[in-house]
Amino acid sequence: MRLSFWLHQHLPQVWLQRGPLAWALRPLAVVYGALMAVRRMAFATGLFKIRRVPALVIVVGNVVAGGAGKTPVTIALAKHLLAKGFIVGVISRGHGRQTRDARAVVHDSPALDVGDEPLLIHQATGVPVWVAQARADAALGLLQAHPDVQILICDDGLQHLALARDIEICVMDERGIGNGWLLPAGPLREPWPRPVDWVLNTGPSASGADPVEGYRATRQLADYALSADGQHVPLSTLKNQPLHAVAGLARPEAFFEMLRQSDLTLVSTTALPDHHDYLDWPVAKSTGKTHPKPDGTWLCTEKDAAKLWPHEPGALAVPLVITPETAFWTALDSRVRQLVPH
Image 1 (tube, rainbow, N blue to C red):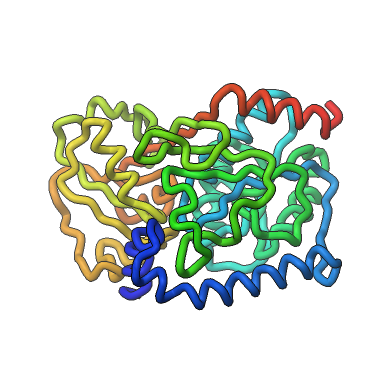
Image 2: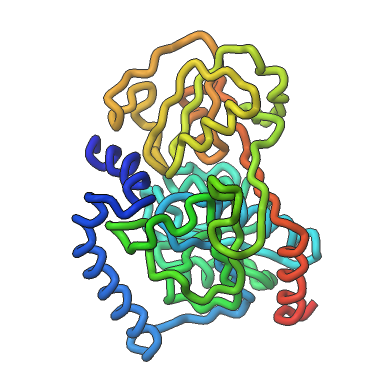
């Protein structure tokens, strides 16, 4: 566990440049690339089946390992399309869950059964959400239960070629494509560039320019936090108070830095692996540290909240909001109107 956590924390730094460790991993990346090419060819030639479902499918994904904001973008898409009058559903693999079947996500589903991100999406939007190992199974299950759904948004799954899709949105953050190499020598899950309908940049590079040409989206924390009973707590009331932040994300430091930029005082920060289950709280075995019961309030992400609240009911969850530029919504609306009778 400690080795995997170390790799989880430090490999992203290795992937930013073509240093000695990246070069050492390069032969494995060549093998990985060859396997990916064979797999893609198998789908293209019909050796592997591609399933189409009776709904418009929008895939929100990325080509780099680690979080870039796919789930907040999925939430923003669902809310936007709902406001336009479309009937929307969301499908996901449900990373981090301990079950393997296809199932619906309900408001009080245990995160360990359905995954933290699908639970967050359902709670934030109210739309039907299904999870399955194969996203096509999730799509078919959702449409059988909700045959009136017109648009399915697939949270992640850009590389899940078994599900036919109508629109692909690739989410990029300030890392761009890193050193441009495939895993494990670089961050790329597949070679880039590759055709997608749109790139949505959720964070500028250090120079201030978008790392990959595409549309822009602002990424910021909400000005409030959520308590376990659903109350909104303005962040302004937490200033000058001792706060302790915890995050089980691909890049937890990004969350901590955004809290600091909100003028909050973080006495301590605890970085945990992505989709951490919190079953070991208050002891984080991955870091070998025991969490004290300090004075102050714990802050976490919305994704972590459902798993942390049973152990730390006084914790507050701070939502992350991603807002695409108007031009992106214009392009999306135009394409959807062409593809969906409305």
